[in-house]
Length: 509
Image 1 (cartoon, helix red, strand yellow):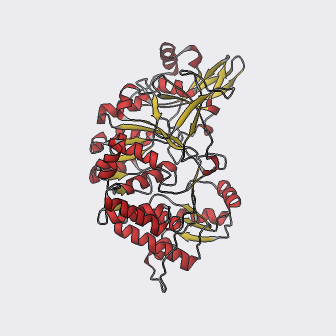
Image 2 (spheres, helix red, strand yellow):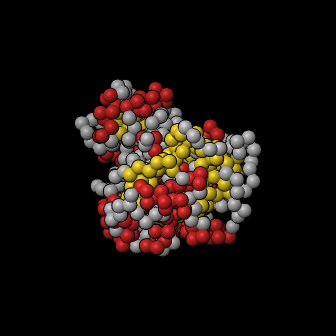
Image 3 (tube, helix red, strand yellow):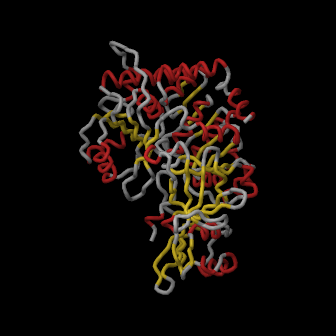
């Protein structure tokens, strides 16, 4: 507790002037996202807040422009509290400013995946009835295909009203905005084929205190001033990284697309100290240019399973700087493995953070003892609004050890029953990736007339290695249990990933 109080004082949250600024921001705005931005603007007015390909804004300017945008949306677009606004944008300044402006007005903010298909968007529009959609130019054709009839606002000038123009518009009758605290922040679950489900949370200053404290005290994020966020902001991982960085007054680097070469150059050029990414991004950067990453002090991985081999590779090239965050769209960030944890527990996703209760449930919906695999269930105060005071079944399987470390076995629907044994594809993936010739691997279950189901492995080989399938089968007999042996191995030139950097096994056969 003393460490936490000391941290809060150091970031000026518990200092007299800090408390005054926070309370005043809450009084001026209500408990919405803009209160965080106003606090940051008063505490770090001249520090660079945000940099994208075109703009670099300090905190004072970012706050002023976001406030102006809120007024412009209200006056010119008749945007009101409780209305539903969807944003379909990649990572750039207009997205961030729109988020704060919409939250300031008390409207419900939906962050949608730019990579959605026509059917998914059509179903979301029918279900949620968005009054306004703010979008990138690449989404305009998609909106035309679904015949969207609400208000469309492009992020950048594109022949019609845009966020950038609204920020620059002189208002004829500026007026003071009322306090609003009612708008929800809605993040969509990451479906690859079906329609994503909405997970709503109140964007309150107080909702995310425990996750913020965990990052602050265990990772010392207040020591660092430049954060690179290549993960999509429309995902819970990305938007949380933005909010935490702003409270700490950090410089946030964003780019619309992740390119391995450009990402390495950006980290080296800006001397970024913290990066939030999915494991495949880190893997590609380490393979291409690990020397460019030496300014990094904290590497926060999340959004997809982190393999033990990547933990070892990262530690060998950059030192022990890797952090594994686990959370779901419904339950939020709940489990963390620190660099110190990963030194000895490379297979673990970590321990529950402060404020999180975790249990492992068996098929009979009863809690199972340590060491037994079951469904990971989580309870905390920042779960989606519809699950308040309830246990959230994450859909993942895993087990706990006696020290409280959690070990992931994979998705519930990934598990197969082979010859009466429960088999998890991730276990074979973690074994195969250790073979010196294997670059990437994905494992799925396939029907089998004798065993009911067996495993099939899809393997991408390293360029300098060309082993035959028979060699891998022989190697696996020494490294994997009988029930983990695959029935088939298929070589691929590449594996499919979603826009969020998750392996898309649904299109593998």
